[in-house]
Length: 141
View (cartoon, rainbow, N blue to C red):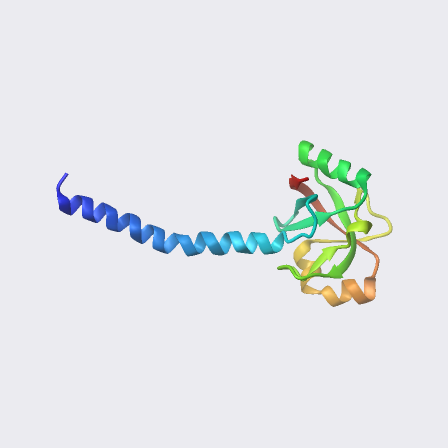
């Protein structure tokens, strides 16, 4: 190979790295902000619109159910009472209110983006449990 070919190949690699590194960084930081959490035991859920959010719980039965959902990749209604939170969505499910259900009778059904877009309604007017149809994509403990 001559020096010109090597130089062109090297320049191509450098350009690709310069272009795609910020995109990869931004994509990862966006995901990290969507899955912001406060404890070492948390799960990432993916709703029916492919949006993600972290879910934390203090209840060992709920944690076991989250682990089962992760293992089986089953979709169920996952939710709780909403509170404002400093993440991409502006909210989280309060950890001690997390519920997993096959059907929802006493709560409202939504998706992560819809909750985020009308947060004031869910926090001040509805004030009860809100569920998203989701599966558990990741689990950390």
